[in-house]
Length: 175
Image 1: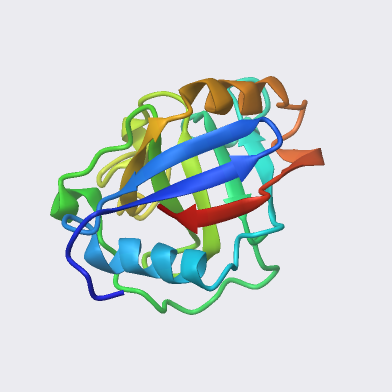
Image 2: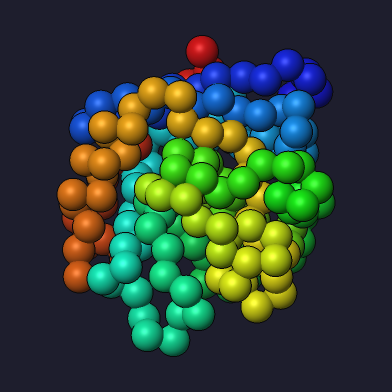
C-alpha cells in the first residue's frame, strides 16, 4: 500500500467489533505491512492467542504489561529482519491504552502478529524496559471504537499468557 492517507480497519470477533485507525502518515512502513496482511485476508480465521496481564507473566520479565496479541502465532524460530523498524522515537506514536503495534523478536524481525494495549505501556516505547535492546515496538495505530470489546477480551485472561481457549478473529477488513 503506497497511500499516504490514514486508513481504518474493523476487527471482528465473537465478542464484538473494534474499529482501528491505522496511522499511515506517521508509521508508513509498519502500517503498510499490517494493511497488506489485512488486504490479503491473512488475519481472517486467526485468533487472539495471548493475553498478558500483571498476574500471569513470568517473574523474570523486567516489567509487566497488559496487552492482547493476535494474528499468526509466533514461529518457533525467530525470523530474520524483514521490515525497517519504525520506533516510537521516530514516529512520535506512543503505547497508550488502545494502541496497536506489531509483535517482534528484534527490530524489524516481525511475523504477522499484532497486539493492542489495555492501558498506557511506556515500557513498550523506544527506550522502554520491556526489550533489552531498548528499541521498543513499532506502534502503527489506535482503537477508535471497541474499548468495551478490548475489556471483554481481557476477561478471558488465564493463569498463563498463552490461552488454552483462543478467541477467534473472524475477519479484519478495510473500512
